[in-house]
Length: 523
Image (cartoon, rainbow, N blue to C red; front, side, top):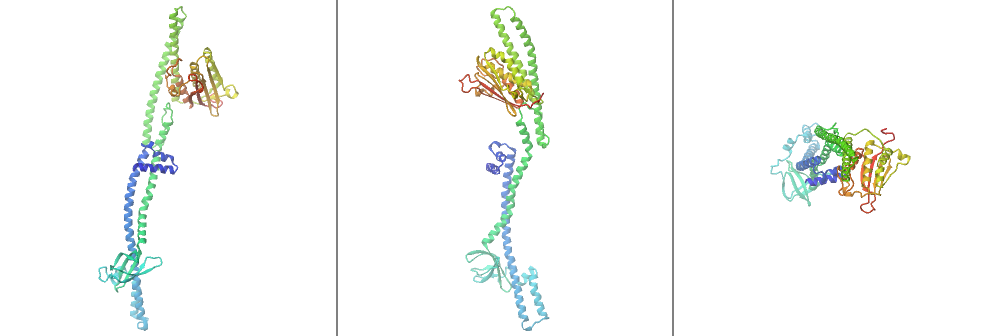
């Protein structure tokens, strides 16, 4: 039954153009509070409606039957009084004919008074005076006797009926001329039979209409009650949906408290509990960030001291084998120093994401030209062509992105340095900047091996490096890039730079879209 009701509400929502109502009863919403409450109330209300409507229908049906019989009885009573009244009128005409009882006669006045009283006397007096009791042997219409039956007809039609069997006074169902009628019989004290009848089909139609009228309000109000219940539940749980929507739309770094103002008491308790959890998670992340930053900072001093000692050692006269070991130590120290620097940059970017900074602005020409100048000799040493496009025009020279300059510099440096490191000798690295109305698109492409589609999500994880890569790195560059891009509400995507090239030389194209800063912003 529940599944049938769910399908009914889904179709109703689709028919009414309410996709939320239709989705509420879809398979993805099996655990919805509104769904459970509405289904439970619907089942209860349907059962209550069926029982109540059935009882109302039966009670109304019986009341309508009694009402129809009562109408026939009342019509017979009216006819009986009219017959007695007419009898008195005939008697007055006989008594006054020939002047036996003229005007002023005592008997004539009493007869006229009795004639008037027939129509005004109470029912018990009339029955005692002019009608036979139901148990009177004469209160019967014998078989073969003909009676004029007045029908409940808009024109007062009457039918002369010869009964085929005997009927006592009261209500009976009889067949007249091939059709069934409901009749009511009454016998007057002088033996006159008074009868009124109604066609049985019309009677049953009236009874059925009366019974349905009794049950109709329940059948009509039940769907209205369901819709009102749905509206009440929907509005009552809207604050909960708002809280869920706010949490769903947040970035993972956004741990600020939820605004629970105006929420009901039950939802407010949930908001307070979630805010407490967010505060504890935020404190844990702050401790973690402080630990990593402190550890990285503490590592820089001994690494700098080791670097100085190795530099001094390399200036001394050493055997070729020893000098080779010293150069290996210098390279290891350089990699470790780079790792510490990258860790500090990553934690700094994550900290900025947790505490949104004021609107900032970074000039594309200034940052990109500075990074290109720093990495030019590294590219030249590897015989690579490092080209920058899109900043030559007047508009390009004024382009700026809405993010801190240090973050934009870290983003460009990591992307270009990765391209230089992973591009083989004789290759090329291309940096292109395009301006849109609201965004600035930065594209860095190379002629290296590229990244396979299956690896493109994993490379953004800290310390993840593709197996088989010969280039030296820390595995933090793209993680830093993604962090600073998301903090600026931008996007970053990876793709082949030259998909038509042979495998191993298709290159990587990194496309970053950042919000464009307004002229003069942050300056």
